[in-house]
Length: 413
Image (cartoon, rainbow, N blue to C red; front, side, top):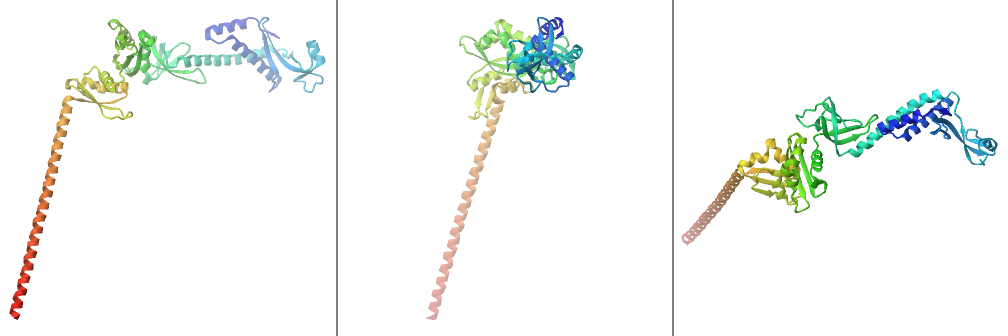
């Protein structure tokens, strides 16, 4: 046996506190390292009956070979005679197993070198697995981190035991990420690598808005108010559709809070990003009207009954057209994402102009049809006149021929 003392156990306990690596994992790693060193020292590739045992009370570790007690030994590596086994344990019998210490002399230095490499690798593996399992559980949730630095347009955020990466597409446009500032991020994905797991976080994901509302609005956390849909253009504007399962609770008012305290906290967290809270409705017409807010709506026409197409025509007053569409189409674009309906917005004057043009085209088409009918009728009349004239000419020629015949008969007489 090799005396290692109590320092190893103290180091294991310290690693368990600091890095969350259990003491049992480290001790098992040490025992595996001892077996690997023994096989290398003894030039043995396979030895299934070899194991290392650590006595925590004495602080000693040794390599042992497990052998089966037999009458006649055929394989000295795995079998031991009953007579030799009696020297180790007097109560042993045939077919029992005994453990025989095979720790080589001067094995401490060799074992220490091998144990250092194995334990270091096992610590890295255990730490990687702990981080992977921890952040797999956090995937799809909101967490707080500290900005470390900016590398190649990626923001590196420390979120506890590891540094996460925030790609440029997951950042808020025009936002300045200063190292040392605290930031709320959404754990988007966790990728396993050969080293530490790679955690991808987002500061622009719509679910950040959901998490913030759940934190600030108790009715949402209790399930009284339900978030039905979220559409976000990070840094500019967000639309959120809410619904109350309790008729006595106003879903929009609950999200705004007393004197706007709840919504102001969320807006401040999102760096003054505009938030439109709209009331969800099972009626698509009412839902679309709410989603187009703050613009007023004159009418909503569902263009098709096909559930997959979902086309709607929204008519607004002339002075509300720009507000309904929004800057660069932002308002109608968010309304489309929120409701899932393709929305075409037109003003009252545009609709009147299109209606007048449609009526004009209809009248013009009718005039053309009347003219075509008149031409057809005139052609038919002309054909009838020509036919009658031809008939008269034929009858006159026939009469003349008869008269000539009568005159010839008289002259012959």
